[in-house]
Amino acid sequence: MCAFMEPAGDSQALRPPLWRTLLVLGRVSNLPTVWSNCLAGWLLGGGGSIQRLLELMAAATCLYTAGMYLNDAFDAGFDQEFRSERPIPRGDITNSMVWTIGLGLLALGVALLLPLGTMAVALGATLAANILIYDAVHKQVSYGPVIMAGCRFFLFLLAAEVADGANGFVLWWALALALYIIGLSYIARCESKAGLIGYWPLVLMAAPLVVGWFAYAGPYRVKELILLAALALWILRSVRFTFWMKPPQVGKTVSSLLAGIVIVDLLAVAGATPMVGAIFLTFFVLCLIFQRFIPAT
Image 1: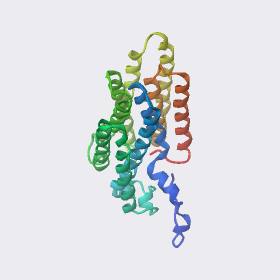
Image 2: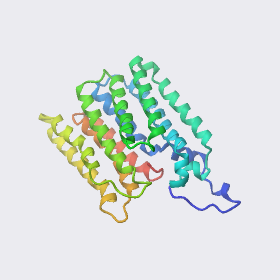
Image 3: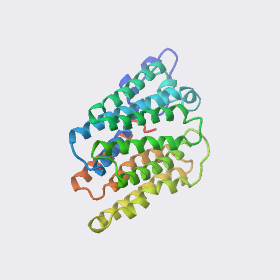
Image 4: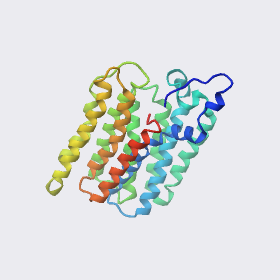
């Protein structure tokens, strides 16, 4: 979303409607990647009750959206200086309201996990704590992307727990996803600050390719190779906006890599049925469509 000038005395007329402000704050264009993580982790954990999966997705939606609101609440001072187009510095919503909504959604997200069992609640509470820690310190520490990756890691484990529980296969894919997020997040750090950090994040983002190469054999090998190629090409397509264009367009790279999370998840369940593949494809398309209307970063 681009900032625009507000002439004196007419700021209220040019202010976006509250519903759009809430969607922008929540970065809801990325929600299909959260649902994708839930579905992939649940399938790798053994699947099971669709009702439990939907309850998980509802909880994860609240937790993710809470994290995005609290991100802006903690970063209000930084955004005032470096990202004045964000809703709080623009005056579209008060910081206190953002705090209230964010903390409320965080509590609701954990509460929605109560019917899913003690371990699900424990993992959900760990995820919520990880979200709070990230939002509070990510601008002050260099390892913020590692904390961010922890959010997706714990979500993946939570999804597996809602099925039959985590196993070694789930852990490998949760780690691969986390490394992809770390690489993506280090690139994202350049969006509001000058300078690039080099090509090394690409090594981390290649982790799903490495795990995927060894994960499947036999009848699933051809499908896996197609998905490996699709993910590799999508990563290259995404990073070209930052590394091979003048001036760099970091925002486009980050938005595209975020959509690529769905491809990572699909690669993790390469042996799934065509119908499941169609669901992941739908999440991917939804992510790209939503990004056209609501900024992903």
